[in-house]
Image (cartoon, rainbow, N blue to C red; front, side, top):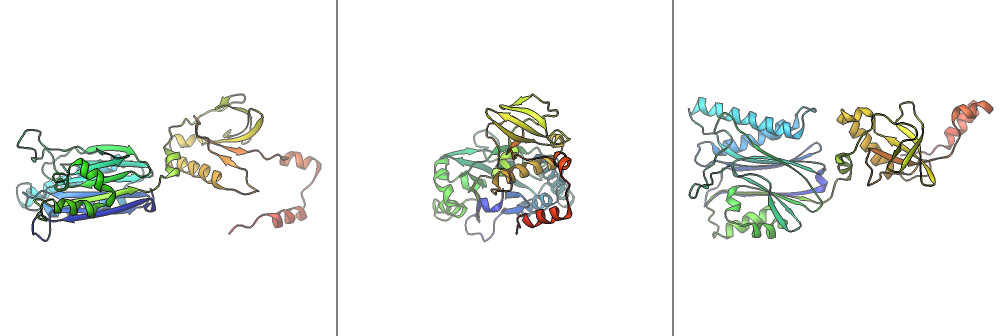
Length: 359
């Protein structure tokens, strides 16, 4: 989802009267991805603040250069496990114990899809239609009196198992990433009411609730989804891509009458009382995401183009297969035309002069 379709805010305050804290956050646009990260350096560790900053920077930098063939899920889990092992090994060498330790929560937005992961007790919430839902999972003990004891954190053990989640976003959704310093002071009802005001307002509200004497570093990042990404919605639709198409076959009420192109992906069709042209996604789109992207963009652009010299196109809402429909222009094919007339240089020159000019 383009950054123009997301409004972001982030704010952090150190505990008590300290000038700097152990929390670290960042929000960036990387190509077509929007990425937000909150890390809460474990205060009992000597290098918690450094760990929080390093994990954030490591993930941001690696998402910039991730292999194109890697999914978002594979990228997140691989990079998180990698930085975990790096910090753990470095701690063992320099301190002979785990000192580069931090919690982590990260979300990546691509189109209308939200991907996220967390390690530790920093959280991700989704606020939709006045309801706040925690998407992340707290890696903390359940026993009374041990609620703040983490069962997992970045850098504490050689291996880590992040909690991973996905969700589809809608217009007006709000996503909150925060350290435990925020949600221990503000309950869900207060978060629900305050999230639309942004990260700064939430953190300041938490601070005021304890007379500006925060017991813990407190950080929030809020992402407001301003507009749905129509192109990405089209791509994410679960639609069949037929490998073979035959004359007489009926798809969504359209009866295939004649293949118009040699690869049998564009057909003259009939529905009710009219003829149309259906163009199906290439077979390669089943395995090649780039080919699928190109076809989705082609269909999207075709339906947006309004001009006399291009057929009107629509993408039916209730289709079961990946295709788009075009208006049929009545005309004569070149073979028939050439049976009774020859094309001259003058004909070609006239045709060229009559073509519309586009800027």
